[in-house]
Length: 189
Image 1 (cartoon, rainbow, N blue to C red):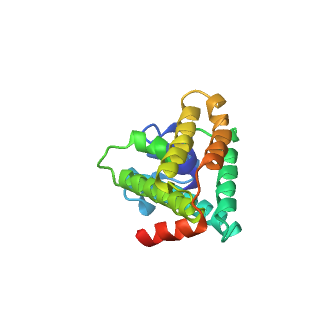
Image 2 (cartoon, rainbow, N blue to C red):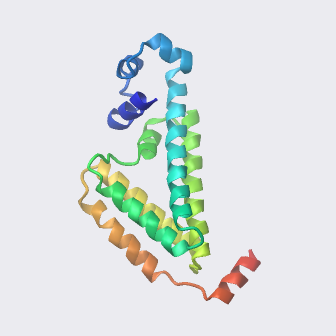
Image 3 (cartoon, one colour):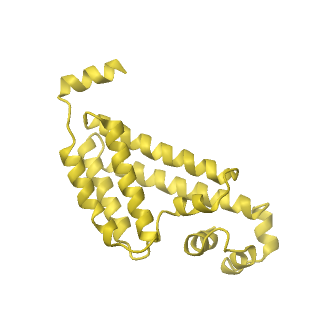
């Protein structure tokens, strides 16, 4: 899986053949096909791995700052900064894969489910941090981060490097509910 993961990310799903995957994995096609019925099954496993890693990172950030949504958000923005300044960054592996996959490919639905879950997780933390418009703020933050990763893939890190300060400014400027107003908003839902 590690060999195919690296190849899929660096080269692309369609450009990588089973022969190249087997060679990189120091095995042969027969062994590869014993574990995966087809290249499509290998792609699904790759997407599942990426989604699990993303979920694990999110859970780690939450648990490191348990009970403090402001620190959780700061931890997430710190993570974003690490991603965007990584010299090996080639954009979001899931977004890269989504562009290559047909709408009917089973991995496409996994990507869409993961991205919805990621946004929903951000909304939960914004609600816990008492932001007045958590859904709207989540959309803005999500689009900035996703857009920055695509910007990296399409031509450079210049604009993407500014995203972290944009995110911090957006979070600082976000209107917050007073504790009693936050409780009323939760009760109304």
